[in-house]
Image (cartoon, rainbow over all chains, first blue to last red; front, side):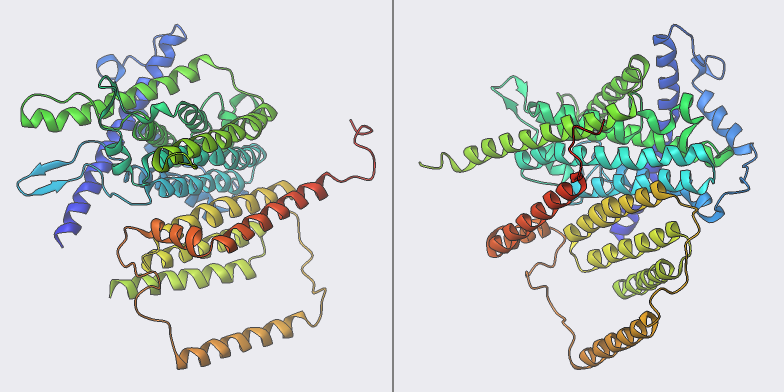
Length: 346
Length: 174
């Protein structure tokens, strides 16, 4: 039963952490985008506007949630929850720090270390598509339906690229457990460069681009293209139901950034020194710092890149990213094989 | 004990999903029913300690295949009224006969023997399912595995060829 309570505690902490991260994340994004667009951004609620997200959340909670007359009510109500669940579930496998040893027991700083974590992540992100598709369909309105048809096509296409980008990582690290992938990125190359998976540069780039598409963020935000589709799949959603979609979107942004760090940027590895408590805290700090850097790239891209056209999006996914990842997989496969077994004739 | 409990719940969900899929008037509800069933089957795999197979089930069936179904349903037109009159009059009695027969076969076989005990791969823990599946696929059954790959590739190429085929020459369309 001990394990049960530990897991329950971890889940609780993970949720509290995640919701607080989202609160800060939304504020950071609004401030940063405002700066890049030569505006000021939210600056009234709390110091430098930090409480703006909280205020907006409360406002949405008290607003009326409207049921459209032509909505398929059951699915219409389930969709926002369905959007949130995979986002929360993905976070459970992310190791946010080095294992901590207290007494004789070692605690992993992740809720659960699945040995199929990579596949679990892909499975959950493929489930996330349904929320958007069903939300758009069940609203019983044109624009959401168009948005969700786009979402289905876009997310299937880029999920293939996302999965293919991870194959070299699995080949290179020879494991699918996130804890082991991070552990494999310890050490250094030639004593100076950290031995991160970033050496798999094509994979890193494909993963990042596919990540933009999976989180439906600019330049791939055709799913909710305001100028064409009013609000996309969540046009008919109001009040707290909309807030759930919003929440899921930002949790997904954090997840994909954190996973980029786990897969390619060495996870929680970084210089560690000082007394024991600092040795436990520094890995968490490095992890969050790297994640913040990746999130900054996401926000930066949103502020600077125009939205792609739909045919460009599809062509880019199928004719550029997927062939590139396939070729790269073969290269890595040969390299890994040579490193492990030597030359075929030797 | 908890295994039986979880199995009972998800077995009920799987059957309910299958019923919704068959009975549902709206194709979207049918698709959701099928999705529920496939997801429950993934839970069964987890109960059997086949975590890898469960993940693959969700990624491929629940993720890719069903999303594609939903996409096609939405593309073709969701709210179109379907013609639900019977086209093949003898279809219903035959379907009932076949399902009753299948149920009888399962019950008779079940009363004789159930496959129980350890898994054939000899793995009980949650670790190592990928290694074991890989061993079986790339070791014991390499030839069958490669033949399947060929079959699927041929099927894909055939589909593309048929979709691309048009009696006119390609230059004429623009």
